[in-house]
Length: 196
Length: 196
Image (cartoon, rainbow over all chains, first blue to last red; front, side, top):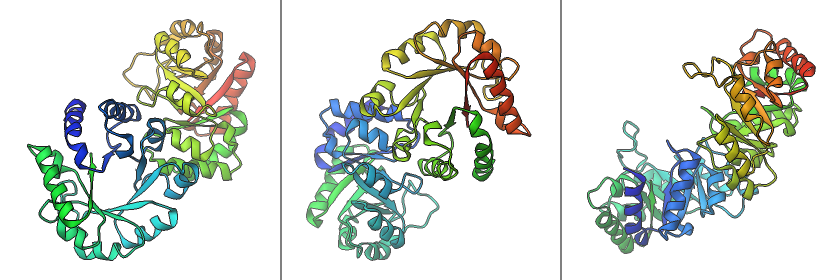
């Protein structure tokens, strides 16, 4: 998918999602910066844009925050230096969730919950583990294999929201897909994030 | 080479170099952060440490500055947001040098000057192009295939200093190598940088 195609999709769907995640994988700092600028010029609010891993790109674009993975700078270091950034930690276990809380993360992204195209060969964490993680004192956003059909189960397990990649972008009609998720969330009382 | 080996070499050689460049290639933000901390605990001054591409790592470690390549955030954006950082731009032509000046770079790294193991298959820029680039109103550090023997020619072409990778790290005795460069620079009146 080209940046232009992505831009068109995001212009259409952003009113139905609360957060758009931009991931650094295979993208240079320069490219990420250009994508954020493109979205900004398309009137997609910076308050909805989270940048994965590249704190520097988030700072110069004034994106709302950063999503940190295991290979990223630590959440506590980032929080100390840049308290203006919202910080999400990508976690894969209850223990990592406890550490994220100590480090000062604002929320955690936990997954993958179900089998997912993005994570072939790795067993999903499942709803039981999600239930355990959501007992932690931090908002949990669930990711991985989430469909409009299973969204309710994810919210019932305690997730505060869901994050979706292929479930929106790999469909013929991303707007219809995102509306189906938004609808499932409305019924379930959660919020949606969009990971790119 | 392990991080521990690198640390030992740097402890030995840093008194003879004015700058140590840490490059992000194949290193995550977390790893780069850990390397800088290791060097700091070994009493290598942060005022000698430049970080390639990752402005965020430079900011949180308080390294002296960043080396920006074509794929990095633009020098002008970085200068605007983080005036405390020293900014070097990696350039490969006179035109890129002019742009680096407009963008507010503090110096440029130009190369590669001679045939270099790090750049197989790409023709070197040569001393004539170096002479042209050094007419620009910005300090030029030369890189690529520089040996203690040809250092004098590089300085005579107008370079303010040299940057060396394999010429030090790929030798049996990095300390002896770095002293040979330091000696060549002393005779030639330049300063040395060490790129890792």
